[in-house]
Image 1 (cartoon, rainbow, N blue to C red):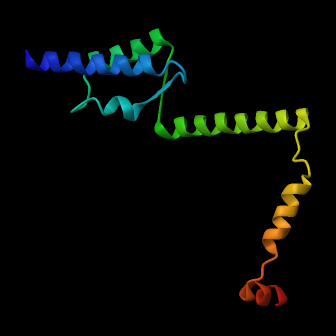
Image 2: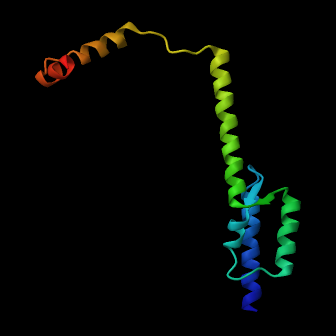
Image 3: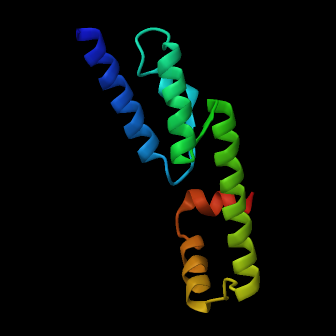
Length: 118
């Protein structure tokens, strides 16, 4: 009886994981495997597959998920580059900032003066 309760708890935790990943639409084999103390039974494997189909969640390896995340990040960077190019946002020259920088670089410190001379 205790093992049935434990199996139900395991499957309940897995269902929670499936519910939590709706945004990405992917879950890793490794995250599912962490929930089991030993190899899942055929019935559990079928239930996991059914959950995957019901929830519309893909089960992938950790490396495939990492590739997916890298592709998503690359898409975001490309969109940001396009947005910046489209908006024409460029750093404008600000004389006050440049003046502060020049004043900071001019120092009466003998070491700085010596290094500047070199």
